[in-house]
Image (cartoon, rainbow, N blue to C red; front, side):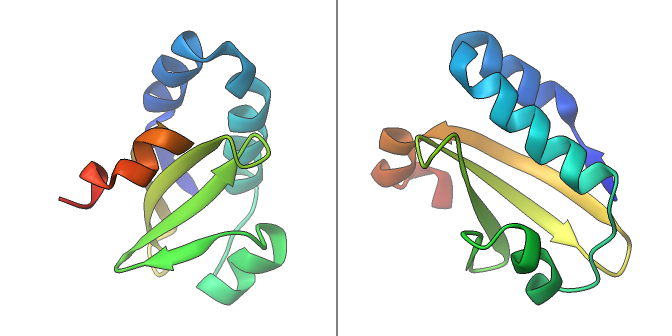
Length: 95
């Protein structure tokens, strides 16, 4: 799949260095595989949740959240936000 954009991940791990390994793993699993549906994605990422039209991934042992828009039919993944668990719980990302 084509992940847009790795820069968002890099900017986040520069602030939260302990997230780098987990974010790189997430990136590689998406980039080097193809998923045709949310159920296929959940086979690799069982904790992924669908929230409205976005998919929320637990990153770094549930310490961080990655919010993405995935277009399975086009093979595109758009990174919308990477947040700490606290930022995610505040809910501002839903607006």
